[in-house]
Image (cartoon, rainbow, N blue to C red; front, top):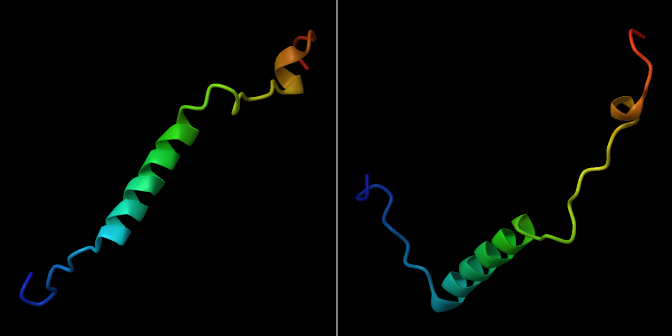
Length: 50
């Protein structure tokens, strides 16, 4: 398969961009200040059975 599709070497700039994007993605996923889900109104009702 490598004969048909040769491996493309990444330039240092491309490697840096991939690394930077991976770090930013992981930081966004672990952000403790945002991303909290708001409770829906259905979870806060006090009526039963509809």
